[in-house]
Length: 282
Ligand SMILES: O=P(O)(O)O[C@@H]1C[C@H](O)[C@@H](CO)O1
Image (cartoon, rainbow, N blue to C red; front, side):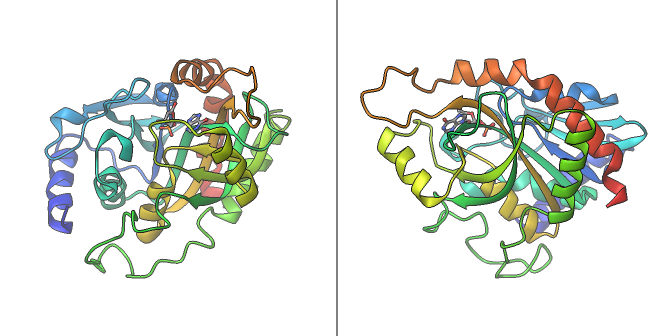
């Protein structure tokens, strides 16, 4: 997508809504309900937006939702794009550039993830402090190809990707909401999927310093930081990864991931609502 093609998508969308949100949300698997906390909603099915990819994964509805929360305008992706769906990585992140041109300054990226850190429990919320872009360390980076300086620089730093001040805000809010016992902080590792990891792969990721593993987010964060959007990353721990060979533990499965997402969506909704209400203060 050229800058101009994103501009024409923007024209299509903005001629159909008067809302101009500065805060974006990407809903992880089973977390589409986050859009339900908005009022004065205006929803655009992805399939009706010119040149937009469509969601193909259960637990990802496929709507771009505009709405308000306590007077603050928000745009929400109810459904994201994964590389394993067959989309190129640059295509997966195009909605982030759409959000940028709409005026988004802060993006709250959520995902479902398996825990690698054995101190984490299913239902915990992991505030992402850093990521390992396993599939991107080679050349599967969304910024690969000719750089358009209107988005950002050719070489984009990532050492401060997960905004320190926003993380402090999330910690404070979790405490206030009595969610701090579930709040963990750690490193998210993105793998390509769609197969889950072998036991040896999980052991490897643990050695590398990963606390949780999933199939999204890192490419989105790269695209967001490239165009100077500040990022909050939140993983819901939906399953514990099997760490030992010949174990009787239940293997990872998407049904469990969706179910746990659904079970804990209220905690996430409370957290995200409060974050949005306080975001201007940092
Ligand atoms: O979109 P997210 O990262 O929340 O979804 C995770 C990763 C896979 O898409 C799926 C596996 O169950 O859940």
